[in-house]
View 1 (cartoon, rainbow, N blue to C red):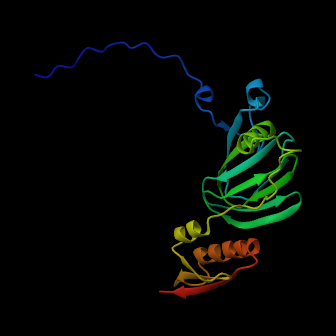
View 2: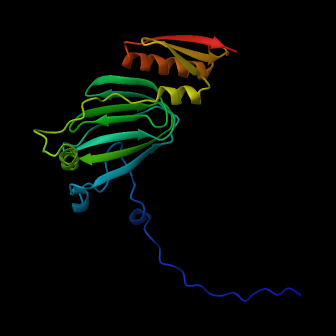
View 3: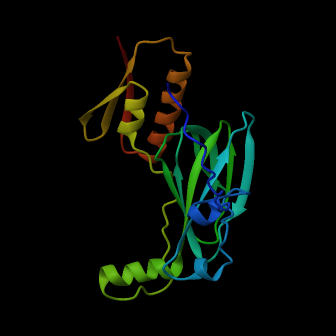
Length: 215
């Protein structure tokens, strides 16, 4: 006969703060880092990492101005659709694939309209830390403020095409041929490819892009 073991009372562990365990904070407001007022976060060797999630199906508009003491590095964690303005100038409209990265320099106003759910990691890198890295790399201090001046989203074209089932061939240094699986031109996949390639073409004006259907 099988007998059940007597129950042993195990003292309940005290509740632990997930905030203390998880170094990645959750943003209540878009691109407004949490805990940046603490003394630890103000240290030169500290990087603040937070996460912004938006699950709504309706378009959501957000705007903010980057702090004057740090660069903001945004890393996309899931595919989304958005319009992004940098310093009052539109720099992207369309699909953003996982891994797409954008850098905002200190004190720059930015605006985003998300047309689909999103999940973004925001990394806030202090100016003293960048100066320290520069000194370590070049053996001398940087004259003036360090500013990463290219705000455009950084995409991996090959990764995007792979996810959408497409392939690309570089025929010449200035020609790129994209092969799309045969499908009606009105499909969502075809529209996403067209929008993405238009955005990529705008960032690479020296390359002509041709779209070819294949079956």
